[in-house]
Amino acid sequence: MSTIRQLSIFLENQFGRLNEVLEALSNENINITALTIADTSEYGILRLIVSEPAKAYDVLKTAGFSVNLTDVLALWVSHKAGSLAQVLKKFAEEKLSIEYLYAFCLGEKAIIVLRTDNHPKAMEIIEGNKFALINEDDIKNI
Amino acid sequence: MIWNETFECMSREDMRRCQSRRLIDTVERVYHNVPFYRKKMQEMGVTPEDIHGIEDLPRLPFTTKKDLRDNYPYGLFAVPMSEIVRIHASSGTTGKPTVVGYTRKDLATWSEVMARTMTAAGITRHDFVHVAYGYGMFTGGFGAHGGAEKIGASVIPISGGNTRRQLQIMHDFGSTALACTPSYALHLAEALLESDYKRDEFKLRTGTFGAEPWTENMRREIEEKLRIKAIDIFGLSEIIGPGVSSECTCQDGLHVFEDHFVPEIIDPKTLEALPEGADGELVFTTITKEGLPLLRYRTYDLTSLDYSPCRCGRTLVRMKKCYGRSDDMLIIRGVNVFPSTVESVLLDMKETSPHYLLIVDRQSALDTLELQVEVDGNYFTDRISELQNLTNRIQHTMESALQVSLKVKLVEPKTIARSEGKAVRVIDKRKLS
Image (tube, rainbow over all chains, first blue to last red; front, side, top):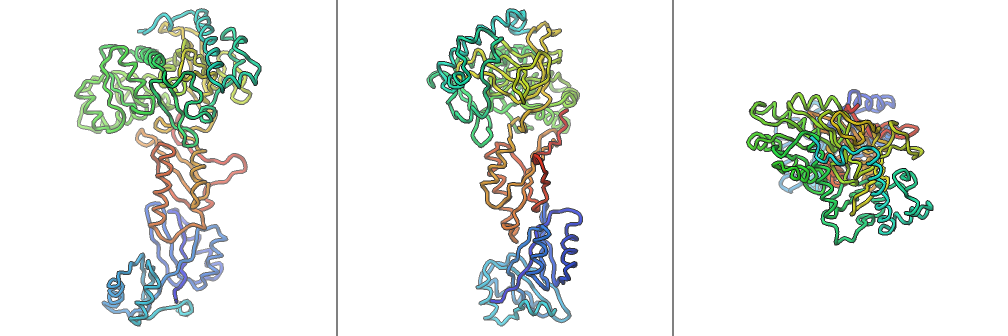
């Protein structure tokens, strides 16, 4: 199974907290490929895809952050109208729930990162439909 | 006006004689009927024969909330349960409530002292007494009710909550006297100002407020906004409930109904009785109670006593408004909250570290309680729904343990200050002094 590790960090809604995370990573020369923040009225969860997830985890843990590594799926889709819908339609047909998803594009291609409630089932759908999965090595080269 | 001139205006000498007689009788009863007290007195080498009068009070053992808890629920009762006609309870330190029981005579005593309280506040049989204290296990509602009924006033037992309905009833029924917590009185005042009602359409003229600490500033605010006289009353369920002491309309100290409850001031550290006028912890000995007589019950409230007669004619000793606590108990919306309860609940929940901070504030007159809890780094989950569930679970468990509503806020680990000495667990932003 080829999931990738995403860093999830609990952040209180306070000035400067996000910056502290970014600086801690920058000091260790860790590059961020993707970033998203889910926010509630009281706190946020920062989600990061980085070049070296294990090292980044240790760095943030040592700096005192509530951090964990979460397995997520990353897929290539083409940067065209309807391509994301095509992927999600298959998931919906198999009644697979998506807990969260974020996406970004790179020229002609786009990457979607998602967490489902059942990764093994998601893998079956991905393989069955020949969707292009991205692994951690690929991430380093993006 | 004075309800019971015989006792409320007695000479100091007669009062001491009355107290001495009643104390001797009480000690006799608890020694023979309550194993806890017999054992304590035997350990101290004191027998009922050693107690000749009120001057011997310092020879008797203290009682604490912990003793009530250790003998939960009925262990300190001094009569057979068949004699108990009412049971009330207040929140305790570990989820177990503090249980109190009344005989029929105790209930009569309670309405007597509350009748004195109502009368001292200028309330008469011509008044409509709007009782907005909670009715139930809390002693506030029933206590005020009994006193108001005894003086022959028309009692409106509306209980707490539902502010709009409170205003409607107060307006339509012509309530003249209000009995509730001071913070609820302020809340009602603000609700009235925001409502479509006009103050002139209300007949409200006075109020008796207690069950939580309040300041002179709050009193002024209540008096100005509600245009009533605000009388401070004091009590605790262990002693009887409301009706332990009350201000008169001179508003110059609270008259202790000392023919029933004898006050002392002690040094909370050395436990030595302090001389007249000294600041210290207030201790009560009940001398007429049958169901749950208590010797030298520590209130942990800090105040002082003044034995000079009042301008109103009462000779009863007056206690100053309490200026603090000698333990860490918080009173929030009339409910006793112990930080130690919070700690034990958190320790039982594996997801959170026992690092917490309670923030007490007062917003638009009502006390608010926020609990900040550090999310243990090992438990932290990426799913917001699980974090929300955790918040809800902490909130429900806390609310049922503390009996007071609160807001839970998850914070990052190590963000709550650790100190070298006693950890700061509570920030009380209410201005009470």
